[in-house]
Image (cartoon, rainbow, N blue to C red; front, side, top):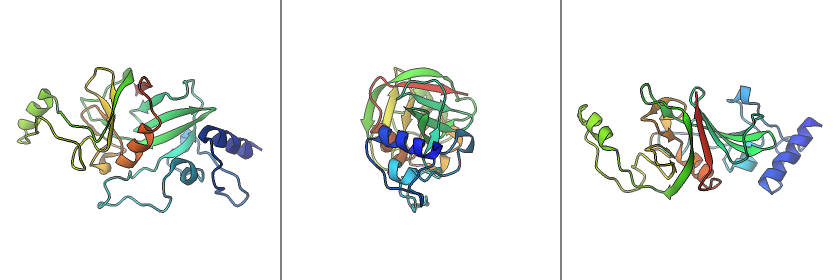
Length: 212
C-alpha cells in the first residue's frame, strides 16, 4: 500500500501518468539515506535516459544521476536546499518528495552557508570573473578573460540562476568530473543536463538555502 500511495503522489506532482517501471506497475522512491541508489521512477519522471552513461566525450552528463528521494524536512514546495557536506542539491516538490541532484560546492576557503533567492536566470550566460578571482588566478600564471560569452567552453555552462546580489550562482559546468566534489570558488555547479532540468522548474524569487 505504501508503494502504491507513493506512486499516486508522484503522479500528482508531475501532472502526468508515467510509464510503470516495476513488473507490478508500482514505483519506488529512494530514501535520502540511500542517496546513491537509483529509483525506478527516475527515467519516467526526470527525463533522464537510464541507459545513458557519463563519458569524457560528453560534458553534459553528471557522474551522479538525479533522482527522486523521500524528503520529510519542513520546507515549502519549490525551495532549493544545497547540502555542502553531501554535495547534493534538493529541489523540494512537496508531499515528502524532492528531486536530488549531485553538485560541486566551494572548496576549502570558499565554502559558505546562508539563504537567498533566485534574482535572475540566464541561458548560456556570459561569464564575468570577479577582479579578485582574476588576480588570484594570475598569481598562479592562469590569466582569465574579463568577460567570456556563453558557450560550451564557458565555465558557467548551459544555465545560471543568480542568488540575490551576491557573486554566487547555481550554474552548469564544462567540468562534470567536479560534480560530487568541493572544487568551486563558492558557486554551486551542476552538470549541464541537470541545470537545464532544474532551471525549467525554478522561478524568480525561489528560496535557496545553502547549509553544512
